[in-house]
Length: 104
View 1 (cartoon, helix red, strand yellow):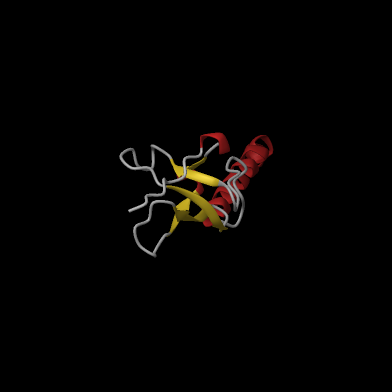
View 2 (cartoon, one colour):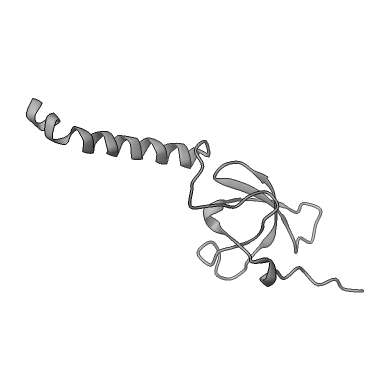
């Protein structure tokens, strides 16, 4: 058994470290370096989240792996929505389409 640990200890340590980091990322404690969404960014839901209806808005709160946005097209006063960062994509400011104002 000692020779097994001697030959494979670094791989086992690496596997445990990766699992611990994933647990921390999933709980929102450890930031995911692949998602750079921050407060103030204008975001939209990805097709993987909902291919029929996209939701967009400005990020107003950041909780690690989740954010709260103000829904641009909300029809009620309840316009705050929470999403996993992995379900959102940042929109380029040049491609941002704010909802049109109607003069009804």
